[in-house]
Length: 114
Image (cartoon, rainbow, N blue to C red; front, side, top):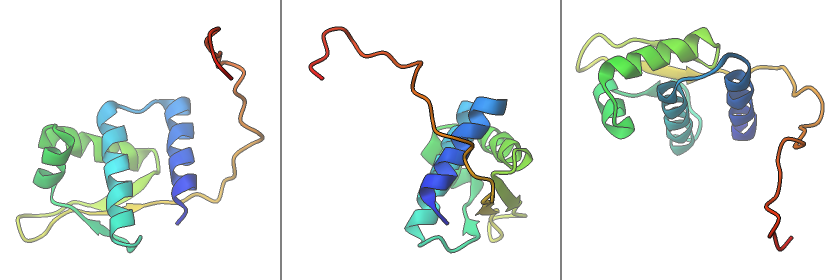
């Protein structure tokens, strides 16, 4: 997996169809966990622990993961209790970025030293 491609894919999706704050937080939490465990999938994460790290409710985590699943960014298997935690898998797409990225909407401050 290529973290740069995963991040770029997230932002393209967010620009096209929007993303909630909870979806963004969960996605980047999962990217960090995947990196920590050397990109071995699936990622096992108790919902209660995720909600503490993201400073949100378990219900928001559940909504966020469903939103990410619908958008094709993750797959997951819900857990069924304390000894059976949810499993998350980051999904990759074979689609390539279409053309160069444009920065025409950015403006530099007039007092820039550049």
